[in-house]
Structure formats: structure tokens, C-alpha cells
Length: 114
Length: 113
Image 1 (cartoon, rainbow over the protein chains, first blue to last red):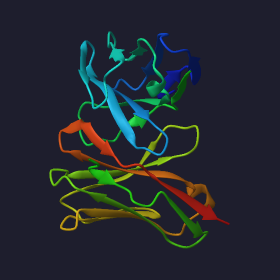
Image 2 (cartoon, helix red, strand yellow):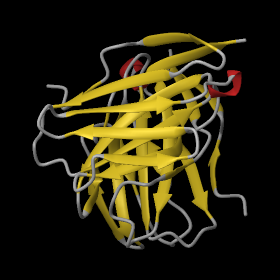
Image 3 (tube, rainbow over the protein chains, first blue to last red):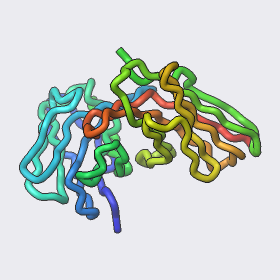
Image 4 (cartoon, rainbow over the protein chains, first blue to last red):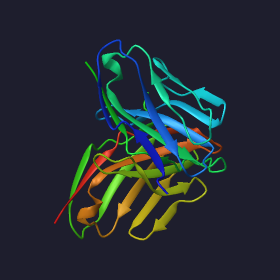
């Protein structure tokens, strides 16, 4: 099992560019999440999905979009990148019935916007 | 407004001694608490959790204590090992809402040989 796989691991963007962070999991988890972690801060939820075709906003959704066409994949789209989006992004997943917060995380994607 | 607070950014202990990491919360609706461990360049990994109906949960060298009246929990690592050096995140959630998981800022633990 690969678990949760994120690509790319590193990316540098120019202001105004767009990109998609990819996330895929092979654990048949229904729930998937995108978090961002800024230096010295905790993880903040951007978007989450409770199953294919269903997504919802988290705490910090502005500037991002997501889609969930399959159980396995949950890409995060950044439109018009801004320096404030410089961060480390983590994708996570869990079973539907594990509604107690035990998440499985990917290794992270470090994004720099210049 | 931080609902989950880890007031110590860093902690240094000697190998073999006890490490105590602390976490405070403000939201009385939280009823499930977790600790995650994170190594550099890796994602967080789940370490241990505790429900609000308990005041202690133990898993090998790791024990989490919950004091609901004080809205405080702590993670004890005994004995500490150099491989325990990592950032530890405290997190809290309301039962039935994993999307409402709230993380603290983390405490960087260094265990010196």
C-alpha cells in the first residue's frame, strides 16, 4: 500500500500562475482533506470531501478549488497564485466511520509563490 | 482565536528521561483529542488519542492524560529516545466531525543522546 501520495513535492510559482496539487490514496477512504501549514503554525483545513462528488469548504478556502470525481483522487487547484499561498500543503484521508480525527497524511507539497 | 494551544514551541530532554508535552483547549465542545508526530519532510502521523470519557490512555511508552475541568491534556513519553525527536501536534475534535479537527501549533521535541 502506498497510502496517501502527493505530487509534486516541491514547486515554485510566479504570482498569478495556476497549478494543481495532486493527491491520491489507495486505502479506499471516503473522507479526504487538504490542509496547509504555515511556518510555526498548526494545520488549517482548506477543503474536505466526504465522498466522490461531494466537497465542502474548510477554514481557509479562499483562492483554492477542489474536485472529487473518484474515491481515490482529490486534487487541489490554485488559481491566480499569491505570495500568501506560500505554504506546505498536506493531503489526508480516513474512513467514513472514523469520525474521530485519525487521519492518514501524505508527505506534503511545498509551494513557493514569488 | 486559538482553540487549541501548545504554549511551548520547543522542549529538550535527555535520553531515558520523561518528556511531557502540554496542550490547552478553550472549546468545551471538544470531546476527542489526538496527538500527531511529524518528522521533517514527512506528513504527520497519528500517535495516540483519548476520548473525553477517559482521563488516561496508554500505548507503550506514550501516555496521554486529560483533565477536562482544566481543559488541559498532556503527552508523556517514558523513556524518551532520540528517535522521538520530532514536532508533536495536539488536535481536538467534536465527535462525529473529523472535518472539524483543530490543530495546535506544535511543540518541537529534541531528545539528546
